[in-house]
Image (cartoon, rainbow, N blue to C red; front, side, top):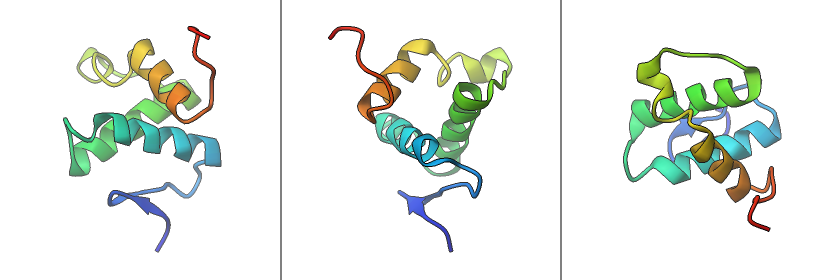
Length: 84
């Protein structure tokens, strides 16, 4: 069995930086969602952020906003905060 975080599996094709970012997304949102919902949101966010995928408004309205994206990427060290 592959690597997991809070019961959510790492995808076979995920690069290390994508997995770190997805785990940070999971940490950021685990108090609001869990299980399959949290897993699917984290995958949708990663697909949007790293692969350029787009989704309908019902998906994009929450997990794909740039503010959430930047916070997650800053928290796992993939970008520097603009406030520095």
